[in-house]
Amino acid sequence: MGTMQVLLIFIFATIAGMGSCLDEFQTHRPLIACTMTGLILGDMTTGIIIGGTLEMMALGWMNIGAAIAPDAALASVISTILVVAGHQDVATGIAIAMPLAAAGQVLAIICKTISVVFQHKADSYAEEGNLFGIDLCNYGALILQGLRVGIPAVLVAMSVGTGVVEDMLNAIPPVITGGLQVAGGFIVVVGYAMVINMMGASYLMPFFFLGFVVAAFTNFNLVALGVIGLVSAIIYIQLNPKYQAVAAAPAAASGGSDSGLDDELD
Image (tube, rainbow, N blue to C red):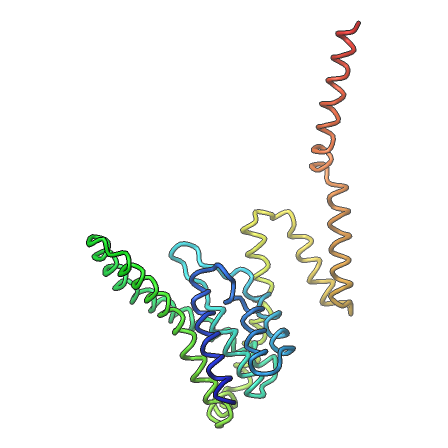
């Protein structure tokens, strides 16, 4: 791997680490992080494949209050490096992404704990009226979160090709990697279920299970499954009495006003 590629990986991984805290530009999401990492390494197609799979697993991952979700940025960048530059298969990269996400979650907690120092320093700057000092504290804590992803990504990128990473991956027993792959498949379902649960749309769960059954027992591609989902949604809306009542309400109101007008004319 060239020096320029390592530098670009460090820059983007740092930006992705910052994005996992800001939640503004979504650079930490697997679809973006894996795609950009694959582009830097010269294999954007593989990056999109990994990112699309990990994105389904990470749909329900989000920071809510003090609860810190598994780190999608670290898992996305390093798993893509291992698959593209480390010549590992996609299934292995996805299986390794799960423990990487858990490790990134621990690193995020450590960085947030260290950031308390910056917060107290910012309080002292606020008492002095030093706005520049407050900005420095904010940027310092943000950069710390970025380095949390950037430094491990560079270490892995520099180790790829030396045999160290390959030996470590080959030392993992097949029963563990196979178990991680099975768990990764379950987490995809859990991610969708968490999103539906947060939406409060439990009445859509039958379609949720039906979709996975159709995908598992048929050979339909994603386009066919998307068309089936769209048609099912249209039929559901047309037959659901709740939506029929909403559509009938304006008509009833209009009919009532006309009859009232006729009564006044009489």
